[in-house]
Image 1 (tube, rainbow, N blue to C red):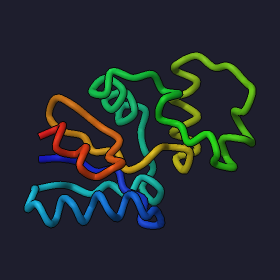
Image 2 (cartoon, helix red, strand yellow; image 1 turned 60 degrees about the horizontal axis):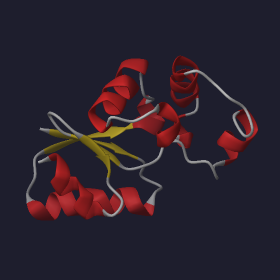
Image 3 (cartoon, one colour; image 1 turned 135 degrees about the vertical axis):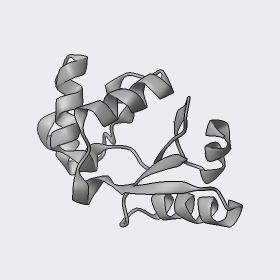
Image 4 (cartoon, helix red, strand yellow; image 1 turned 90 degrees about the vertical axis):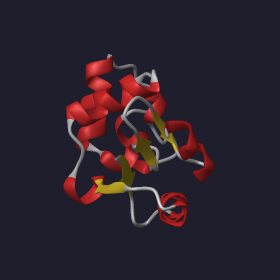
Length: 113
């Protein structure tokens, strides 16, 4: 079953949710703003995306500008910042058994099936 890290206020996230529903794909919604995101969640996403933590960041987000702009962090520090400020996370993120993608556009979801 796929997982979608979803922000209800995000148009792109809602579009990915609709895509999953229309395709009849089984999925679990994780509202990471309300329930937060754990260090383990972020590490699994990074592993399945073969990415670095800073690749998951929305650099135009006010929280990013407040906490991170112009600064350099280690991977564990970036992960901690994402967990403490989940609104900085790019979205939507769809995680499959072996791969994860930032589902923008929603058709990228097909890459994890």
